Image (cartoon, rainbow, N blue to C red):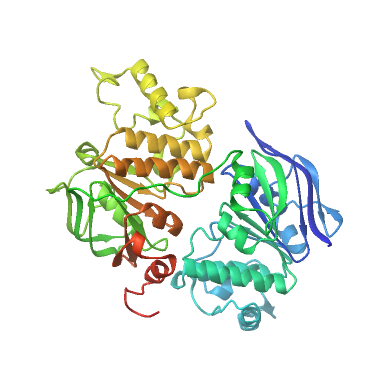
Length: 507
């Protein structure tokens, strides 16, 4: 089978880290090649080199057997290479057509000719089963539809090789199924696809071959059909990984958190959360499932004191804390694993030891007479790092910025659990992590539940919600659609509710 792309002995170094260490991969005509690896393994760097966003330090790239230099994305496009980034590159107040033609606007004389562009987009959309309205405004369409616009952008530029970077991280289960079908259509039309992902289930469902990268090196390439998920996980992490979450059935205890008819305004000054009510008890994990941007952020910020509420009440163990500040809430027993570890979880230029006392640095023994006490802080940091397997090159003195994503996350989880909270709010606790780190963090969350703590889990990963939760609350457009028991529901029912279909209604 003919090779469409070959990347041979690619090396790329950033200050203090070798992202790609003599990596070689090849993409065959008409196949889906999965690139699998831990967080920070070098997958996205490699694809950014192929798309012209980075220049390799060493190595060569061949497209259809011919050696090429790709110095920018325009050159990549000219060679028939397109990329759908994890974070879409779209102008929200433009139409779909305007977004697709941006940078290569069609002209009729001196005037823009959007009519013929829209006609071509309609034809491409029909041909590939994308179902896109060229006249719709981006901010009015779903995340799944925005992704289709990114795919159309590539097809409009005649891309033959399509790179998808973590394409399912923001989609509902139904949208993921639709995307898989779109990928199959693309392959049937003779395109070739490189899929960057952490998700073994999706690789099994769609890919032909899988190249595994670990710490910047290629571990091997396997045929997906004849290789098990656990084998691929072992190649990725370097050890056996357990996929099941072991948790025994337990009866929840006293009421810890009560959210009573809560309404919260979003940054756009509209109600991001509307009349939302929920209870979380001691010894249970309550999962909140929903498509990204449906009020989860506003809800969590209201609970943790980062955003003021419009109406309603928040009660912790029967006490109204709606007007309490952030520190008061921490002291009352709320801990928070935030969704963005780098923006909200850590001060990246502080050492690990100072990050581990961010909420407690003014308490004894970490401070005395207003002065920080270095030795107790370091001793505490070493204990948390040991307890939560946080690996850092220079130990507790390492800057948080230089830790891998998985170790940054484990440091935050360790810090918050060490507070011994009554209520642990865990938002996207395993976002962007590999299966080894995911397994570890899941175990620690279940441990909290088993110790009689209340856990509120907010995640976009439906598997995670179904595996960890005792109860699942589904949120859509800021409203509670319904609450189901995790052991009495399935991905399909929750997926439909995430799309706004209430229990008992038909789609």
